[in-house]
Image (cartoon, rainbow, N blue to C red; front, top):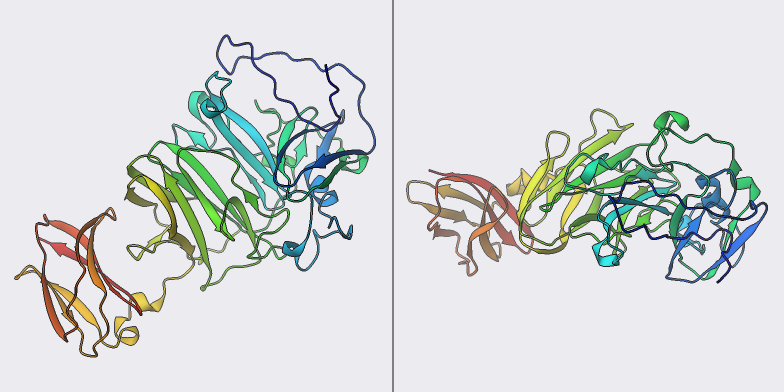
Amino acid sequence: NGTLKAGEGFTMKGPGTGAFFEEQNYVFVGKPNNGDISLELKAGSNYLLGNPYPSAFDADQFIIDNGRDTNTDQDITNSDSPANSNPTSTGALYFWNHWGGGSHILSDYQGGYGIYNFSGAVAAPSFGTDVQEVATGGTLTNRPGRYIPVGQGFFVVAKHTGPLKFNNAQRIFEREADFNSVFMRSDETEPRDLRMKIRIGFNSVNTIHRQLLLTIDSLATPSVDYGFDAMVLDNLMDDLYWIIEGENYTVQGLDGIDETTKIPLGMHVSNSGTNEITLDSLENATDNLNMYLHDKYTDVYQDLRTGAYQIELETGTYLNRFEITFAIPNTLTTEEENFNNLKFYYAFNRNKIVILNPNGVELEHLEIFNIMGQSVDAVRDLYQASYNEYEVNNLSSGTYIVQLRTPSGNLTKKIIIK
């Protein structure tokens, strides 16, 4: 009995019969929209919008037009410090992609959000396969594109209370791609993006596949940037995300990377088991770019350009354990320089860990991990003498990682028990 506002998006229930992917026809009746359209957003809310025009519109221009400081009306998308702006929304567009299921109960929804902003696009997370383009039942989860077709709905996240605007300058003539999901575009339809893009993949214990995007752009900063960073909007049983200023993000823009750059990752898993972090793809990067997944708990650096990092994890949330780095610190291979000649080794003939501590470095504790990263033995009370021995108990033959912790840093070594 109400009035549908131009620019708002609407969800419609299915017929309740048949498979979720069967086509269902819905009809909008009314006059085509033209000209300026404005909607009021409330800070902290998610707003479902829709292309209000009888033509495609340009998502980049839409983000630019709404990237103005609501106090000064200054365009902040090309400023030197976009993180200090005051726009109405975050500058990210979220497109729902359904995997399966026929429930109208929100907690039972099977799907996720594809994302588009200035940094680029990522597909919705998929389920049941680590192939990003195909989710359960063969449903495509391709990346959203720059040009949004007629009638396509999407979410934005309101950062501040204020107006969000559509206008005719955002409209564009662009044919739809021949994909099952009309808001997905082929790469050939848009100008080539020459920026470096790093796509990190996460294959979870429950077969969720999530992809994260990191884009190098001179207009972005390490802080939260309008139009370059996109928060997590999904509620998945398992997930991986960038951590920026204490919040979880799927897309991140940075102005550059070097050997000192460290990019924090967060993860949660709802069941115990094996999880995997991979390099899904690397675009416009040099062959000599190094990239590592650093497990700070075991102090292991996995070269993602040569293989994935697999880890056995218990149910829980891990916000301070993982990070992406672009070099291995020298402290990992030159213990003498950084720990004042502190050394340890495994004496296999006596089945003991021997610690040599001639300079009296304070020792906190010793811990042993199996190759999957599980803690299998630990000694909490270490002697502070220059020579110490500790028995290795009840360990089967195999490869282990031993970590000696001190206030100055951790000393890590791989040992083989026969």
